[in-house]
Amino acid sequence: MSENSEQTVFTHSRTTGAIAVVGVLLLSISTAIAVISPPATEYEISLYESYPTSFWGCIIGSLFSGSLLIFRSIGNSNERSWVFGTSLMLATDALLLLMPLIRGYVMYGDADPLTHLGYVQDIVNTGTTGANIYPLAHLLVLATADATGLEAMTLAMLTPVIFSAVYFGGMVYLLFQVADSRSGFLLGLPFVLLPILGYSHSLFRPFDFSILLIPVVLYLFFKSQRHPTPAIRAVLVLTLLSTLLYHPLTAVFVTAIFMLYYIVQYIPRIQTIYQSPTSAFGLSLAVIMSWYSNFPGVILRFDTIYRVLFGSDSSDAPVQAYAQTAQEATPSLIDIVQFITFRFGTEMVLFGLGGGLFGVALLFGLKKGDVLDTRTTIMGAVVGVFGTSGLLFLLLDLIVTQERPWQVAKIGAVLLLGPLFHIIRIRLGQPSRSLLARSTKPAITLTVLVLIVLSTLTLFPSPLSGMTNDQVTAMEVEGSEWLTEHETGNRELYHFDIEYRRFHHAEHGVSEGLPFWEVFLPPHFNYTTSQYFGQNYGSGKYVMINRKGRIFYQETYPDYPQRWKYTSQDFQRFNRDRTVDRSYDNGDIRIYLANGTKMEGT
Image 1: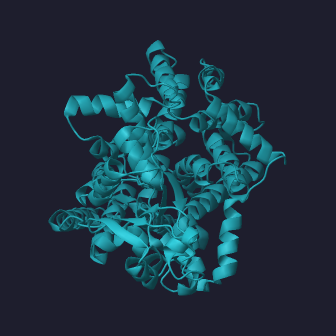
Image 2: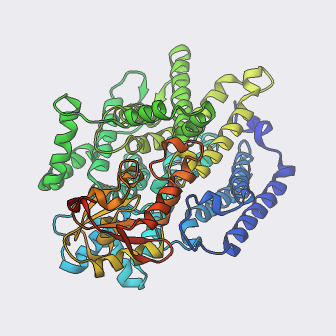
Image 3: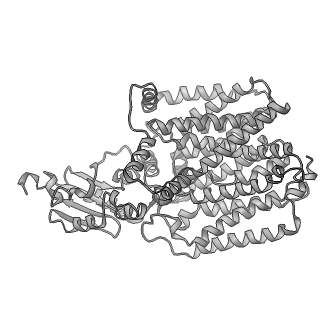
């Protein structure tokens, strides 16, 4: 099929202007709603519930309008609506990724991101990176804070947005290298402009930054093969070194991608387009061995993975936790479908379509003698290898969750969609010849719409996926600081759904010793077996409870009260408990001193 003959499939120039107007209008409405809405004054269990449904509908509509504008440039080399469509999608992405800041959150990310701010504070305190195994992200925030005067927590929310902008730019240029035609590039462009990587677009963590840099590294790698100039090769080496030093796991992932590339070059019937003048695989392996081997923590982590894989160590895998929860709670079918859709929906669509289309393309190659090139094949191999690796992380306790290798697999899968849709459309022939050929246009349109909805509604954690908002409130920061300043004695700190050590890290640094040993609160405060909380302990204990903990079960699992570890009645009873004194309350954080009476026999 020629480029001009494809015009009948996607190009209807009379409605292009109308789509552009609608897209801009939808983006303007969503921006206005976000700006005029009052900022958050307390913890919100879900960012999605903080705005009306119309807001999210406008976001989805704006992204879809941009996609349609890009599609309308297919088949007509003079049509430039794809440029406007790309700009519209990027502007909508920016609005989405800036939502925590626009919402007025003091910080986004209530676990690892706070600890990483602690590493920044360590550098301030000591003047060195010490034993920090991934200092680049922390040095970047420190230098930017010194240059701009912005608060570290504000920069922790801005930095992922900046890295996401680099990611989208890298994906566009990488798609241009992977696609073998203008039509294949334009078919794939809407897919790569979606925030499919979820939390990697919003959290201040070195791993996520390094994942967002992978498209840039791969683009420079392919570019250096086509044009092996000293300048391009130098930029590739510098970018590769930066990515490898951000996080050890990403270093392993990137090295594995290069190894796959060199293996693919020797597979029969795979067209080798370029020969690499730079040993990226060898360089990556050398960096891993020379840098990360200096840190005992990294070696211990790999040792743990080895023992789990080869049977000398065992613990509960993520899939076992899911199965146990399902067995105990016996959720309804609709709740199971909802959980799977919002927790794994994006992965299911991308892996299913990317893998399926790649399989069809391989089948065409076997039957009709077509040859896939190394760029397309390596993306298919990335989907297969890292998708399968993610299953291992799901089935075995390998320190981190399955989402990490799946992030790499999603990059490969989303890059495959456009080029492979293009190959299949060409092989099926003119739309007028068969029903299957006529179905390609609605199939592609429906696919991009489904991915727009999923990537938008799973960008931030919410009860829809069995998770809660990662918002950090100013009152949580203030309450943690108060406890640090007023703590007395060597007491244990009992808590639920708030980790004091994270706030202590952010304020004083990771290397600073913690004043408490943190312990999870017992279910129902042990009121099922004791009349008073203090009867369970022989000495005084601190108890820290935030608003998130008080509403967690009611908001996240409203239909399963029998599975709640804490109820509103438990919290009310705890407030009236005569062995408990409330020491601090700012409306969000409540800090108590529980008097142990066990030795008194009370």
